[in-house]
Length: 98
Image (cartoon, rainbow, N blue to C red):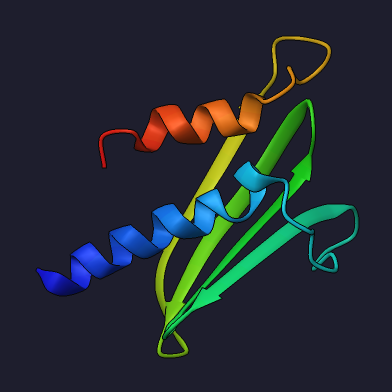
C-alpha cells in the first residue's frame, strides 16, 4: 500500500508543478505539442498535449526507469479564451480531498 501512496503523492505533486503552475515548458516531443516533465526520487512524469481549444494529450509516469502508469485525455473548451487562473483552479479542486 505504501507504494500506491507514494505514487499518488508524486502524481499530485507533478501535476501541481507542471501545467498547473505555468512551469517552463519542455522542448516539444512532437510537432506543435506542449510538453512538461517532472522528476523526483525514482519517479519521472511527462505530460504532452496537442491543441488548445480542442486538445488531446497523454500523461506518463516511469518508476525506476520502467513504465509505471499512463493516461490519455481529450477535451474541448466551450469558451473562446481560457479564463485567467483556470488551470490552477482545476488542480486545486481536483486534488483538494487528496
